[in-house]
Length: 223
Figure 1 (cartoon, rainbow, N blue to C red):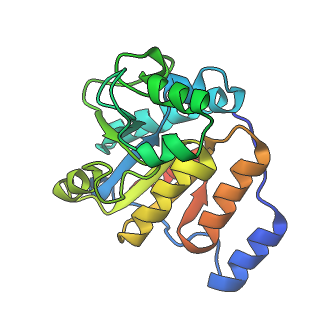
Figure 2: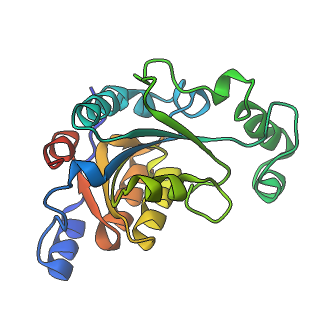
Figure 3: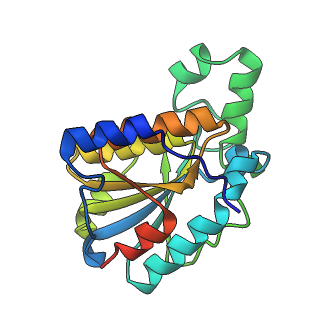
C-alpha cells in the first residue's frame, strides 16, 4: 500500500482562506493533458520504501491515462551523456556533495549504469515518451526539450507524480505552473524519503501553484 501522509489542517485552512476552495481545477480535458512521472529511476527508488510504495499508484494513473489518450511521459535525470563522462551539472556535483557522494550521484545517474534505468516494477509502455533532464526541473532553460514537446502536443494540463516530492517533483510542478500549465500533484503518487519532506513539498505547492489530489481523484478528473 502507498505510504499515506495527511496534509495538516492549518494548510487546508490557509488554502480555503486564500482561494475559497481546495481545488482550482475541476477537470482536465484528456486531449490537452499529459502525465509526467519524475525520476522514478533505480538510483532514487530501489532502496527507498516510500518511493517503492507509490509504484502501484503510478501504474494505475498511467494505465488510466493511456485508456483516455493522455500521453505518459517518464522524465529522468541524466547527469552525463554516458557513464564516465563529465557532469552536465558541474556546479551541483562539485559544491553540493562530498567528492565521493558527488561521484556516486554522477556515475549512477548516467546511461550505462543500472541506477539510471527506470525502476523495473513500473509499467512503461512502448508508446510512452522518455525525456531526459539535466536539472531538478525539466522546464529550466537548457534542461530538456520537454516544454517544446508539450507545446507541440497542445498540452495545457499536467498531472505530476514521482520522487522526490519536495525536490524534482515540486520543482517541475512549480515551473510548469509559471509557464502557464494547469498542474496537479498527486499526493499518494509522489514520495520523499521522509514524511516531513513529502509534506513540505506538497504544502508549498498547494498554497500557490496548483492542486493536490489523490490517485483516485486525479484519474476521475480526466474528462
